[in-house]
Length: 340
Image: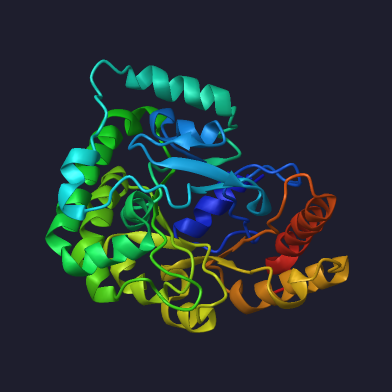
């Protein structure tokens, strides 16, 4: 019998899966199936997230926001880098000597308790170069730095990339991942934050250097990029990206599917917009939204559902809606390809 992991990897390797997979960012109490994927990050890099907030390895303070299910954001107004030309005095990589990488990976996997026969492990390290710069400086100063001092931004990203690539070289072999993940939210809902030209000049070289680990390992590479980021797809494909999440509905996903087919897996296509944003959205409306999304994007393969309702973790209505959504995705997705 095909497992959720096998079905998901069929999708990433360009085959039509037996059913529509669901891509998730992490486990949820509302899940009714074993997750097809699990993102892992070395504890050295994600300890502040595991603790629900605090300083990252670079000294940026992250705080939870209740309205987004305790998702972490840089502490408002508390930016550590005021002048991009002085980044060398502020951004200092921690010492990596003396770390037992094999033990770190082994203990982390044991703590996560992943059934690797059922769930694909995706290796990730950070949320992106563009995003890290914004965390250092804030959007006003960060965007100005990219425009006014591109050489300094490039040098900073090169320094960060050296550090992350060192870690990947040390620990990735012990995780033995099934998938390699890249992340960077270079777009807002209405438009990208930066032009494709600036992306190619200042960000893509470092996505490419990291993607090389996935290419060398012969495993699929996925890209996480929120917002209207479809203008970057061609660049992603050139570095080996096979799938894009959360592929939000502000993009022309019908055109993306028509142009790229199974060459680029769309993992998303669903957002809690319109009637779905109503506090009293019905079970039937949620089911209908899932059916519409799969009818548009799942035919022929190249699609995984990705999405959920966001709100306070103690809000019973958020939990209800996510239970209904999870059930709808499973019921409709499991039978989708059997109809043809």
